[in-house]
Length: 206
Image (cartoon, rainbow, N blue to C red):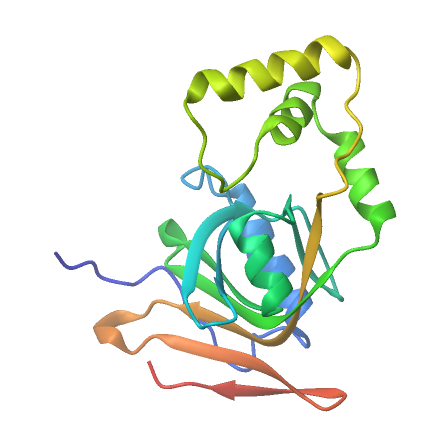
């Protein structure tokens, strides 16, 4: 199986001045691309304290100059990993555009007020599902989850309080790499790398 990469280019003179502006430009193009169903889907890779790696797909929920934010249970596998080893890599694979973005950085829990604001913006059903789920834990069967969800629905018919063990993580980047597929495997890879208080741009070999 082989695919030709001829959708675009990425050069130093067309790169934005900072990683966030470049990310925003590419993200907006991914949102506008009808072939991409969930442009905010990203793979989050973590490692436990003993080095055991783990990866899963989650949804980006906020992005600004501080970093990229997603929400989960702090007691889930990724939550436990990030508590033990607060570093992560994010990977956006916008394959129809023949692009990837790779973000590596340090992870912090967001302020509880930010978690509250996002939780309160969620549909009632999503609140119920999140609050009912013992994420990453073994359960006896689907009926266990459905029973827990129904109990919460009966107790909270309008809005569910945010569980204390659920909230946001922000990945504060050390590096942000933008990858554009090019013919003959000579892909464009431009990386913003934090150097003290400034950022440097580096071209990586494909």
